[in-house]
Amino acid sequence: MTDAPNETVLRSRVPEAGAGQKLVAWLGSRFRYLDEAQWRVEIEAFRVTINGKAARADDRLRRGDEVAYRPVHEEPRANTAIEVLHDDPDFAVVFKPAHLVAHADGAFVQNTFFRALERRYQSRGEQPPVALAHRLDRETSGLMIATKRAAASRALQQQFAAGAVEKEYLAIVHGRVEADHFAVDGFLGRDPRSEITIRRAVATVGGNGAQPARTSFRVEERVGDFTLVRAFPETGRTHQIRAHLTHAGHSIVGDKLYGRTDADYIEYVRFVKSGGDPWWDGRLAAGRQLLHAAVIRFAHPTTGAPLSFASEMPEDMVQFLRNHRS
Image (cartoon, rainbow, N blue to C red; front, side, top):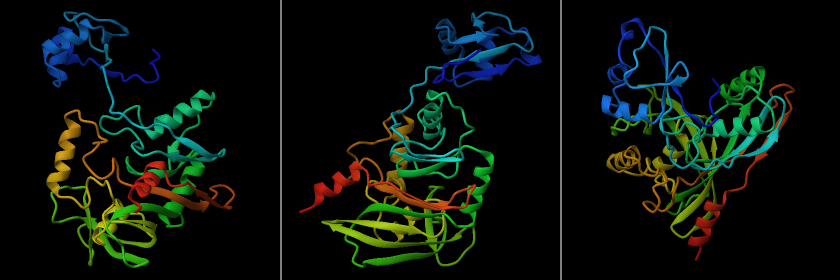
């Protein structure tokens, strides 16, 4: 059976213990996110099949039957307007807009950077084995590298591991940064003062998984109560720029995790999990964290030639600065 390209299909083989059971009873006992009454609704809506054929709630199952379920899945909105800036037989450099996860995560299955890029190649009659060389947060815009050959993927992973890939980011932060240049150095690990496991904090000593991390910064423009800075990460730790700017007292505008309390972030997570829009419009000074991966430099994974790619600051960041200029 060929599935529609944007369709989610959940499949399961009936084990020996399920043989002889009615379909609705087996589903209700094995997949408890719906009860039997709810499973009857799904079956009657023709969203459940047995061996590719329409099923009835009271059908008796046999060992080895394939039960398939096509749930109605409405993903949160996402901006899938990617732009391929450079396409090479080995890799592609692609602009990822804000509000787009890199790969399937939680409620996002089809509305991802990875699937958008796959669809782009499929529309051209191509099916390269695409892999992501690195990640950007869902709300961060900017440049990403996707590989199209296994050898290129290995070569680029080695460059990232060796710290040979140079990156520059643009960020709009709260407050007026007085120093034209500054740096944050130390160890970056889980924040011991927070119950949010993904929150990172700077420490003066290592331990508990903390790793050395350094980012240097340069002020690009001061605009009222905000500052546009350019970040030069010298290491590549999780949330490094966001945590370093918060440590410096200048969290990124629109960041829902850093520069805010645990309660603030938990409120956001609960809102999204209850079906709320992850863009959370109007709650913060900006609809997303104003962080943009602007420049990336690396060696061609096959030829070794030095490469450099740049992406202009996106319109939402440009507009934010424009709105706050006196």
